[in-house]
Amino acid sequence: MIHIRVLIGLPAYNEEAGIASVLRKIAKLKEISKYDIEVIVVNDGSIDNTGDIVLNISNHNAFIKLLNHETNRGLGEAVKTILHYAIDNLDNNDVLITLDADNTHDPLLIEAMLDKLTDQNLDLVVASRFTKGGREIGLSNIRKMYSRGAKYYFKLFFPIHNLNDYSSGFRAYRVSMLKEAQNKWNDLVTTDGFDCMAEIAAKFSKMQIRAGEVPLVLHYDYKEGKSKMRIGKTVKGYFSLLSKVKRI
Image 1 (cartoon, rainbow, N blue to C red):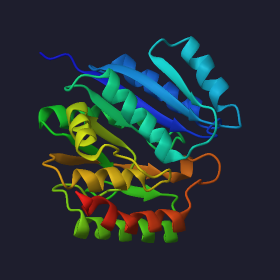
Image 2 (image 1 turned 90 degrees about the vertical axis):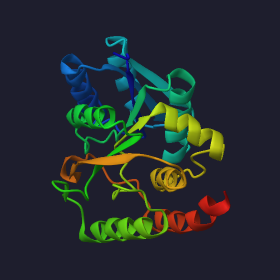
Image 3 (image 1 turned 180 degrees about the vertical axis):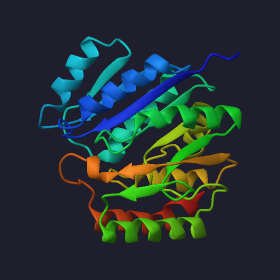
């Protein structure tokens, strides 16, 4: 049986309220998981106690590593740091998991994502609000409208079989596909904003990618603090992909 390392990457900016809870849940997952789990947290120039909290936890848990951006560069840059770390440090059969650090994603779902990816020999598994069993709790109607509009936009212009949720940041990537995509596009992420996840999926749509989804119950009611997403900038970023991704 091939040994698979699983790297969980968490981009974090001012997440002192929820980051400890997320890491405790991941530690609980590691205890029961059949996979070899490691964690990196990219502290993206937080001005609260996020870095100190993660450092303290990592000092008592060798499988957790903290990477720091000295200043806040944006979600896209934090995700780019995670992707580059995975590409540089993992083998082709290994898996990168990304999820939010604000307690809205349940790390215990990771085991099902990994099982689906390995059992069905997929390149990408997304925890999706838009597959059977998925839903959103505590999200405003306007945000729901935007997320569903994005779904149909991406399905029209950047279709990927079996993928409906293009903006979800809760994903499992086979590292071989990340390396192939990096070679094709040079930079998988060229934005610093929340549209970075959609950019990755849009670029994957131009490749022979095998994708699948597991249902996600997005608990926005568990989120601590205000949303950092700027809807106008994100929507503008989505439309820019029409020219950006079709260059190749």
